[in-house]
Length: 211
Picture 1: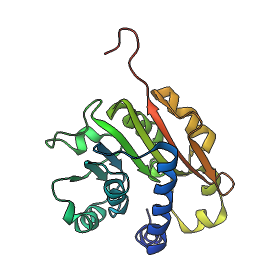
Picture 2: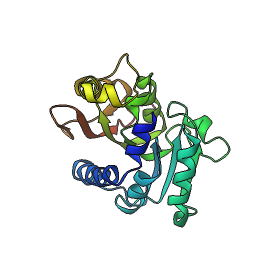
Picture 3: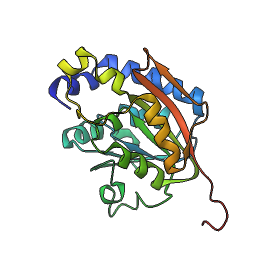
């Protein structure tokens, strides 16, 4: 993210919007009481706080590439000591990010949250695959994303810095999920003419001889 977007994601309006998005995700997919959760791209930790307080998760393992964001999140989440693990690393390799802390293994989490981070990742399909890898069968993937429709708008192109190639529309993101065993059904919504996508997908249960 560039300086403008960093300032925006740390602003009160973004916190208000994220609170609204969390309410929408609860309506689509329910809460996660007592769950072990991963968050990709935790930023300053406000989404992590919502996962703990609003969704009711017992523990959150959260990752972000930016060490400055990890520092901000550490300050914000100080009172949740013992319930939060923060790590600098990539959303496409959670095992490496949480190395030594016992997280990021196959089928490790009851839920994974993405508060508008996957559209920043050039190889975004790898991030979706990583979400599916760490989710338990029956686990839920809560996502709130910015689509190619929004990123193509002049304001976005002028103010923000995003990968220029292979950005996903809402339909393309939804189509990618089942390729990784993630099924959303009708639990998704778009906002502002398809600019924003919110939804909840569930990981398939093993079938046949799968373990």
